[in-house]
Image (cartoon, rainbow, N blue to C red; front, side, top):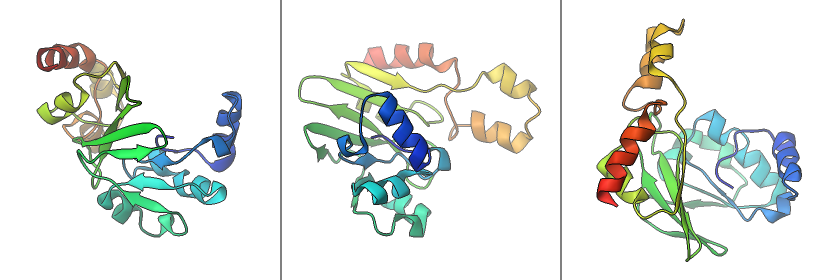
Amino acid sequence: MLDCGFGIRETERRLARLGMLPTDVTGIVVTHEHQDHVGGVFKFARRHGMPVWLTHGTAQAIGADARGVTTHFCRDAQMIAIGTLQILPYTVPHDAREPVQFVIGDGTRKLGVLTDAGHATPHLIEALGGCDALMLECNHDRAMLADSLYPPSLKYRIGGDYGHLSNQTPRKFWRQSTRRA
């Protein structure tokens, strides 16, 4: 499982909707410490006895929430094997302690995951090069954000270089990644 921002019951409900049981989950890999990504990770992992992989920086930011859970540390460019999957963490520019995203492969195909990142870096583009598929989160429209009632600090946080990709990013991102891949 990649991140788990939901509570235990909601996570179990969503797994059931997919025809899965919590015992079908081998472990959880965590991108960073923001609540929408880690809010339910350790409660779910404790209840179902599964390990969690995260960076040292993320673990430090979480603090006591990880107690009682088997944790493994990961870092940029250090491959993790979980079951039959090979998972490669790569660092991203985001406003967290030590954020990573992941490229996940089974020996035949690779899926790149990019959720929270403020902008595309050469390192990020290189990490995603050669992926067969990409799950890319772009979650704001620049004009709508600028015109919103959000306070300036939140507008800057969302739209800044360490915030989130805008909805206009995919076109620019793909031009850069196809040049490097």
